[in-house]
Length: 340
Image 1 (cartoon, rainbow, N blue to C red):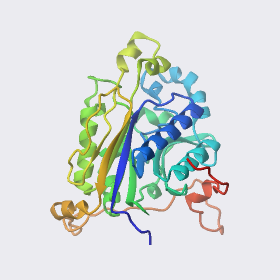
Image 2 (cartoon, rainbow, N blue to C red):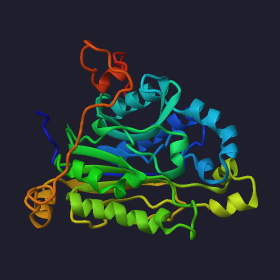
Image 3 (spheres, helix red, strand yellow):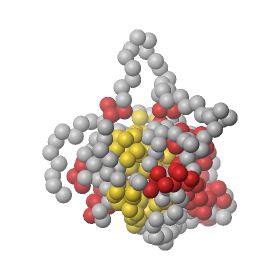
Image 4 (tube, rainbow, N blue to C red):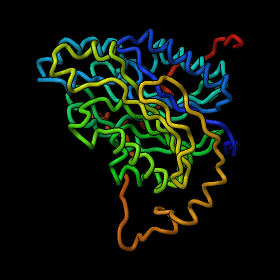
C-alpha cells in the first residue's frame, strides 16, 4: 500500500500556453515544474489541453473556418510515447514533484482531451480522457469511457481529475466522490471566450462549479486555468466579430479546501503565476463529518449510481487476453536523469 504524506504544498498553474507549438509548450511546462519545485510544492496542476493550448478556433465561426487550424492542432498534440511526454516525465523525476498535466492526446488520427498524472519518480499514476467533449469540441476530439472515471492512490493521497465542464456532470462527479478522492485536479481553459454573452462559460460560474466540487466531495480542489494575451487572440481571431468573441485575460486559478474555503490569493486575470496552498489531508475527515454524499449522507435505498468501469473498445478480438493497463502506453524512463 502506498505510504501517504498527510501534509504538503500544492501549486496550480495560471499561465498562457504556447499556442499550437508543442516544443515551446513542453519547454514552458518544464520551466513551471522547476518553479513549483523551488517553491516547495509536491504537486503541480496544469490547465485543460495546456499543450498545445485550448482550441478557441472551434468557437469563432463556421466549421469551414476551422480547416486551417485542424492540421496544426493535430501536429502540435502529444502522444503518450512521444518525446514531449517523456521530457515532462523526466522533469517530474528530476525535481521530485507530482505533475498533473492537461494536453491534447494524439492517438493516430484521433485526438482526446487528456489528463495524465505523473508521480515524483516519473511513473504514470493516472491517464484519463474527457468523457464527453463539450459542445463544439466534439468536432475535434473523441470521447473517453467509464474507465476514465478513476481515483488512484499516490504518495499525496487519493488523486482524481476532471476537465472543464465535466464539473457540471453530477454522475461523473459522484463516481469520483464514491472512490474517496482526497485531492482533485480541476483543469480549465481561460474564461475570455464569449464574455458577457454566455454566463455558463464565465469565470464566475466555473469558479462556483469548482468550489461546489470541493464541498460535495470534501476534497482539496486545484483549479488550474489558462490565460490569453492579445498576441494569443491574434493567433485565432482575424475579424472584428471574432475579436469581440474572444477577449484577453480569463485566468482565475485557485485552490479550495475540503470545506469549500478558498486557500489562495486571487491573481489578476491576465497574470501568469503559480498559486500555492498547504494541504492537510486530515482536514477531510472534519469536512466529511458534515457532508459525505457518497458515504454516511447517501441514501442508496432511494437513489444509486451504476458505474461501468470497463474500457470501451471498437474492436474486441475473441480469445485475446485482457487489455493491458495504460502504463504500457508510456515508455520506461531507464536512462539516468541529471541532478537539477
